[in-house]
Image (cartoon, rainbow, N blue to C red; front, top):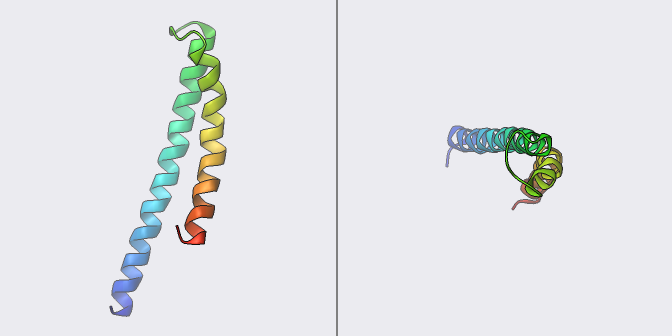
Length: 75
């Protein structure tokens, strides 16, 4: 491959990974708010509400870090 093709490929991979991380963070916010609404009683959820309320921040903070580490390792 030529240098420009390799550079374009690397840029494409970086952009895809960036947007993947942003989507995961957005999903974490959505899960957190859904869990909060269940805890507050605005949505039926029972015991699922507190679980989502805790899982959302984990999804927002931990998963992107773990994915970035995996991608740096070459996975």
